[in-house]
Length: 329
Image (spheres, one colour):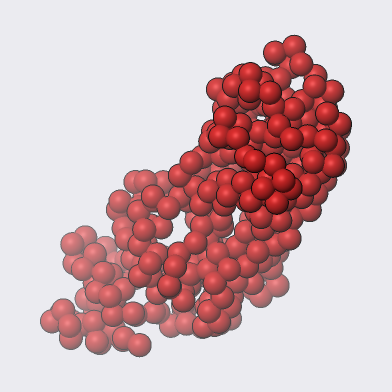
């Protein structure tokens, strides 16, 4: 592993200058500090604090995901991670991320500059600059619902989409539904693609040919329902599966606007089991992701990666929750 002296020798500068660059001293130029940090990353440098197991400092980087209160998807994931980290006396920083942050520093440079031993990334897409850089990172990193191939330093945690979608389709088929629509989340998302394929596979497994007119990508917000539900109704849907509970609330609202009833005329199923699913009228049948356990699993995976246990994927079991929004056709 590279030392401060190795970095100084490579750059032809004093060891003291390298130390200042790594520790954010104000009496060297921004250009020199950046050069020192980039070279340190390139050479695989890690500070003594980063290497000491008893003083782990890690971060949860979060983008495009709400997490401030228990009603929001990211809240319990962060709680689960922090609960596990507290038992190991790890210091956890929750850092809202954005495109500006990603343009100012490379991912590895940001992590080194802030003394983080590893990170858990929430809400990022495959198109984000930092995610694109993860193919070559040496920083232990865990992603939620995104996967990076062929890098032993990066792992993926999520809920089994195939199992979850199949539980929902099986329920609807048991109620006599064959005209089943699927309103997905954002198209540029790995988990959306997984659920799309899982829906097709499950429909065929249950002897029903998927209809392209009954499948659509939206966004993980209720408002997207108005763009797709009218077409689903026109094409004879008797049930609509949704990629999230928030989408499901929008679907139910839109179905009612068209003078139809849930579940008497159209059944609706969500995904996630957010608090709103049990509070909505009618209460929403859904697929539960245990978000506390997702956070705990992310910590377990990150701890493994930090200790050179090369875990690729960690998937939780999905659980079917039946409520009032589904009924016989």
